[in-house]
Image (cartoon, rainbow, N blue to C red; front, top):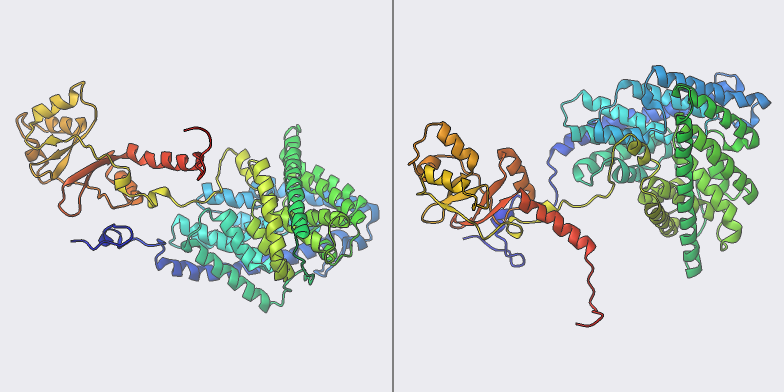
Length: 596
């Protein structure tokens, strides 16, 4: 006799193999490989940052150096307009004759590789993406380094995985581990890198992927510290006041950031649509984008390149609202045009700058707070709303500033911005590009209802059976009778034990094999392999078994006496989906209104 659980009344032995997670020790092997991937990602991240500095020095100062410089100090004057044009032309040529995947900001390409390309990226991407991004940013492109390094780190992880005997899912995990390591290297934000993986790249929330990605991010952060790279990048020591007035202002900033996110997304893809209408090859589009960037640089040089000094200045309260508003307008225009033209570069740093500029411009109208507080809130909310990754944006802002006191207002603003963009836009700036290539993706992660539903909840209990004494002739006549309502039937003996299933194909198979018409079903089914289902097992395993044995129905038998207790098929499994839809659409209330 089975021992019963006091709460569930389900036989313990029926679910002894079940657990909260399905991860096995293989995850430790993948975590070990993730250490190698992380190291390679750190080297790629450091290399990209140095390449950007080198490209900037060559383009604007005519010297072979990796020294930190400001574009405003360039001696080129009006000739500086041509620098982004030349850089964009080079990128167009690299994309045309190298790899088209270097175009854009990188994250959509990583998503596409994960979902559609079995997480395979080639060596060209690993080489050309950082090189093209360094040229784009170094020649004044208003982009960030995070998108390219995510793509580059992902390509490195994918390449290492392709050299090893791993599954597609393990390759995906190593690709994302490389991306997380790259992001951690550039910004020193391991928690945000892990959250980005969970919210955007993994398309699952399981230990088998979370553990290796965590290992990669932590290793990258430790190795980053060995290189004496600064962390946090933008220290912010401001305090936070909690009140209803402040809460209202946090929500307001979130709403405005969500609206800004929508405008920026529409601007980028509106520009892309305009470029699609041009009667020239896409190779030349970046050149036009570069010209717009060059002109924008004349209006406000601070809008060019990565612009980390802008982020630092806004957090310190050193930028006045008027200058912030000009930065917002110029940056938004040149960024959306350049990105829409297919130039290589990231979106994260520009979103921080544009969001921070909005917060700075609005700070005069918001409640009194520490200098830079409203800029920080708007930065994170704009990033979270535009990328639809509120947790990533929240932790990113905390790690960038090293200030945990701002966690509450950050999550309030980011959550609000997320709500605004989810309700107003069908897709984010990252997934819109994937959708435009004809692929739909869903970013809502839920527990598989098949993993929570037992066979007994959906099986048919009123089962119509046929006796084992029925002859082959009578079985054929029964199945072809117009009054027969089902295509298959369990065959049972006098003790209600199932011997097998009959259906028209099995009868035809027996007839072709020369079986005599008077042969009983008992004799025909004797010695055959029977596949059963049990009422206390879960549908996840049952669905796999139905596919493996290539049948549409299975008899359900009792574990205790092996008697038939039900019948289940694919149609019954679909009831789970109907039940789920009903739970989401039907509303109930403790209070009843109206008559009755």
